[in-house]
Amino acid sequence: MTHSLIERAAEGTPPGIAQKLRGLSDRSIAWIFVAPTIFLLLAVNIFPLIWTVYLSFTDYRVNRPNRDIEWVGLANYERILGDAGIWSTMQATAHFLLWTLVLQVLIGFTLAYLINKKFRGNDMWTTIIVLPMMLSPAVVGNFWTFLYQPQIGLFNYAVGFVTGKDPASFSMIGDVSLAPWAIIIADTWMWTPFVMLICLAGLRSIPDSIYEAAECDRASKWRQFWTITLPLVLPFLMLAILFRGIENFKMFDLVVQLTGGGPGNVTTLSSIDLKREAFEKWRTGYSSAYGVILFVTVFGLASIYVKALNKVKER
Amino acid sequence: MSYSITEPTARVKWLAGGLVVAYALITLVPLLWIIATGFKSGADSIAYPPKVLFEPSLEGYVNLFTDRTRATPEMLEAAGPPQNWVEQVARDQGQVIAGPSRFGERFLNSVIIGFGSTALCMILGTAAAYAFSRFRVPLKDDLMFFILSTRMMPPIAVAIPIFLMFRQLGLSDTHLGMILLYTAVNLSLSVWLLKGFIDEIPVEYEEAALIDGYTRFQAFYKVVLPQAATGIASTAIFCLIFAWNEYAFAVLLTSGNAQTAPPFIPTIIGVGGKDWPAVAAGATLFLLPVMVFTILLRKHLLRGITFGALRK
Image (cartoon, rainbow over all chains, first blue to last red; front, top):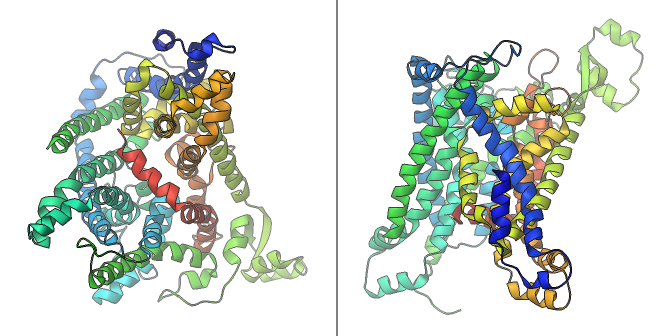
């Protein structure tokens, strides 16, 4: 398959001026330039995908390499979809996804809106706000467990200071009802800047002339916001939601370091569950099917979403 | 300055500025706390109420770079006076140094794998982006699909076959394996970004060079590359930051030899209880370069993030 694609690449390339001069022809340059990239993408991106799909139909276990691999058909899929545990992790993922998106969109858009008021020094403050999203989620997530310590943790102290509660009386990562919020807060702290940056690009793309025209028509600021600003930023905002949605659906590093999925299973997001199945229980075939199901879910949701996004853009 | 009706009033600016600065300061607290905790003594780090002012100590950094064992006062007595200040810091905690820790190695692995994969990704990516930009290549339209598909698959799911493949090829837990893996993960997005930068360079420059007797390769090397330099640099920063921060693949595919810092730092434990100053010291050394980088290169970085997300 590689071969024919590259062949076609070479054929699709018109004979350029260079070919008539000396040196390599454009076709061979196109060949040489694209081949290593295609090879690597096939070997490390596409091939594992196909292999995962194959493994999902077998009962293969990595920790028993000498056992015969048996083709089990759809048995893995049936077991996963019939497993109540999967649905509880899906619920945890949905809860995490929903609230991180809501908070990040609200805060991110508000910040972008304020920064777009072009006060002095807005560049510098934008950079400072962006810092968390540049950092390693695992390292930062690990440190958040320190901030969340009852009594000695800075987060608990701050909450206690504001609300008058005893900082030792609650544990963000130890309490079943608080842990889902602990990961939402940390993720929101880390990734709101991304939504903010995309919204800022959207706000800056709106030409002043539109507002000037609205001003001439005596439209109120309030009306300008709802009829100009929001509709024009909406496609950007939706794109930011798409990227954050995909990322947080497969969230692993930050949360696994923060709560490890606990207490109990309340913060066991899909990726964490998948990691347990694949690399702790070593149920390779089963977890491959799990991975495929997750992939199809994101793919399906994203496709529907992109259709909606395109409709918004066309308006 | 010309008067504009769309320019916000001074009062609006003050209010907006005040709110943004307030948010920025709050968002900065966890980062400042990491840096501060790195310079606290063990006792200060777990003090209640949390200490904002404290006597700086190098305990965290000494503990980060050494392995220690607890020693009784008699053992300390018998060991003789400390050889240097590092040992002194350990003795003050009632411990003796058993040897260097693995942090240095892990940090070096991060540097090797981060820069190695970034360099490889830039070499392959620039070449491919040039071909995609200048020649008619059928895969062009599938590129977005590549990017999206690699983004949608949870890394853990792909890690299974990669784990098997690496084991077969003898690449498990090697620097080369991780470099190839991170290169491949970054490659589709890099080609995508780089193609955008190269598209902006007028074809006429190369045609002029070709007519002057340059070969196509020379034209690429001497005309296109220098003009795409800023674009290449900002793409490289993204690859580097990704490889630097990556955790899922690193924790699953490496253990002894090629493990990078992100899976290692959370596993730092002190002698008897979690040693938070040492963890914070490691985190500081690991995160600070990225923070400084972000502040110094903010123009390119911020443009790159929006550019990468919004191009389609």
